[in-house]
Amino acid sequence: MATKNAGLQAKTRLLLALWDLGGVNQEVKTGDLTKRIISKGKKVADYKVIFEELEKKGAIAISKKGNSQFIKLVSPDGLEVLGEGLRNPDFRFDGTIVGTWTANALLKWIGDQDEARFNTSEPVNGVKNAIVSYEEFEKVSLKVYEQLNRDYNLNNLVPIYRIRREVGERVNREHFTTWLSGKELAQSNADVLGLPNLSKTNQDREAEALKNIQQILNLVSLYNPSHLCYTQTPT
Image (tube, rainbow, N blue to C red; front, top):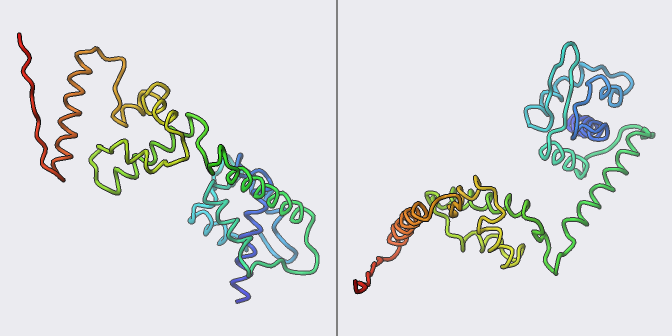
């Protein structure tokens, strides 16, 4: 148990120090990091296994530039491992004195977590996690599209109502319709979602529309037989 707790403490202290040194946004020299975490009686070599384990887990990325080695905290995996370590009931600091950098880093971490919880839980028009920008909607809608397409084997024919259902009340109907119409979506992403390409001629769009209708009918026919009716107009 002591060995397990020692490993938990070493990994968590390493990630906390890396985070405090700005390791999420920039690479940090290994020497600057080890100056903080190496306690009395320990050597850099004692942390070799921990570095390797965290790199294998995807929590950190290690690179070399010339003779110097750099470490970066990978987001979000590294942050999740750090958070789990700090919340672990077995996590403890050895000794009777906690270093100043450790105390300050913990206060900073707590402050950031409180701010993050406030930002994600604050309702917008009474809705939590509301989508308030086109950029966010674009990311969410494409992620939902890919997930539905993968999970239900829809062969790139994901019904819009399914996307609407998954997004739910996070975006109002007016914004959903406007953003999904392709008016503000990047054309490449509009193509992925199967939206009309406004740069094409009317003839091309009509041909594309017919193809889309055929695909829709093929999909519907898997569940219910469909009938196509034509009305002859006088010439």
